[in-house]
Length: 149
Image (tube, rainbow, N blue to C red; front, side, top):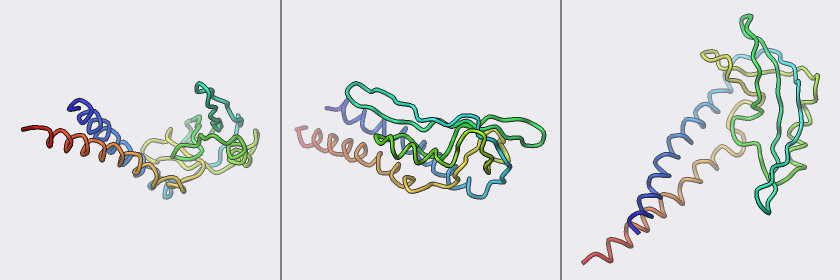
């Protein structure tokens, strides 16, 4: 049980900083400069996970910053996959191949880009993924503490 308690805390300790960093980058992307980019690929991938099927928007775009060319693939900063193929098709609808669109890029790292800046509606959900891990670790620790003489 001690190992289980440690495992919950370890996963939470690793997850929370990563969730925070991604959330900060997503929030910061709203103020990034933009350039025009061209969509070169737009499709939905089907990913089989045993008996489950997941769908992932797969978009590539070309853009230039300061004379350097970059290839981007991020629509949103946070996860764009899900169990609904329809939702993924709707997500890529504005990004047909050949379409010109605004590309938001990090001025400190121009290769880091996104088509839809900000956290979006799923941003706050990331934080809540770590809460069960933390509570599980605390519960396992308290259970162990009660069993000790």
